[in-house]
Length: 229
Image (cartoon, rainbow, N blue to C red):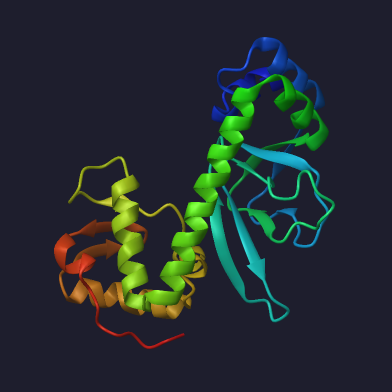
């Protein structure tokens, strides 16, 4: 599939005319990444927009001791690396493929040239940034104000609402428990213990990544303290 057709499928570029998409395609670089392969490293200077054409990646921060906090999961059709595209500041996080992924990067200068002619593109970029800011604020609130049990329960309820299945039917978590633990700021062991406790309390049924919520009201109202990580 040629670059124009690949970029045409990206929601950020919907509504742009053929010439505009062709101009981006001419300057886009497309690369394939294996699961676990690093795409962008923390502190790297990046002046480009990246877009997931297929697959899934995670955006995370890590400290000198190797501890990670996953900030976002980026799905097919979604962009990343907006925050430093037009500055000389280093990128504050790292990006790694969670599964085999095809990624396009477009020089910031190409996006800037197009945005001057296409106000619709600027509006869509603002919408993406606003959505990411809201996600960041929700994460800060969750990590600061909710205990471990509440954070895990809230994620399960959110995952069910995003699943194609109907409420009360089994659904599949989008990531493995180890990656989920990094998002929620807990250890994998604590995550497993808490899910097992929800099972014993008949609030959920779980088998690996498959979850079925049995008592939504109880899960939403859970407030029992959990040992801190």
